[in-house]
Length: 135
Image (tube, rainbow, N blue to C red):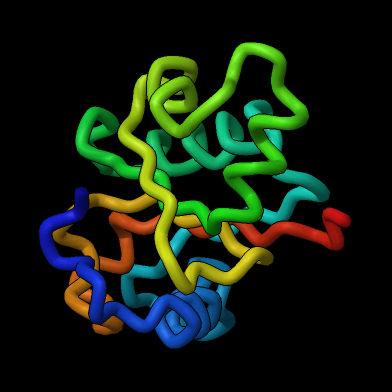
């Protein structure tokens, strides 16, 4: 479990902050969050997010996926070899966590010390997946 994210973390606020910190923000030379969009929560989309994060200067073994309960359920329904978050961890080789209050339109992949509450400590150590209308 990420050390600086706890039951008090407001994931709605955190994801709103993360989504405004895109690396593609015009006119900005500060470190930014990696953001990718995908249509649905699937293993392949999470792997794409992982590849985008790993291509930066992150230690891949330290990254943790944060998913909403609904997205974790969708993933289990769609992927025959995934029945629980533990299976996701095995499939992707990364820790995963279902976070209460995590918005359904966002999946986060981050280093445990990249955020503190809703403050972005190391934006370059955060990758954000924006999920389309997944239905």
